[in-house]
Amino acid sequence: MKNKEIISKMLQIVEKIETYCANMDYNCFAATPMCLEACVFNLSQLGEAVGKLDENFISQHPRLPWRQMKGLRNKIVHDYDGVNPVLVWEIIQNDLPVLKEDLEKII
Image (tube, rainbow, N blue to C red):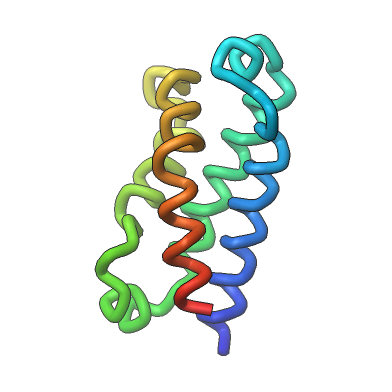
């Protein structure tokens, strides 16, 4: 049950990011520091949530980018070379819709 609760929380995080970025293009996103920072924080929370999942559960769902989510969290938290807003936008636009779909399938 714990894993399903974490996945549900992750889905909520993805939906928050979607709400923050609704009707935005990259220029608007990059020019809105509060939105950028909120998205970066929530992306870090996704990686944090991955760390709470059971290893067995993770291995049962190899399609999901668990390692990449944790890696992004580490990059954000430790600010290795700063956070690239273009990369953040690409993750939001390209990766989150797929992640959302995969998380919904698990639930």
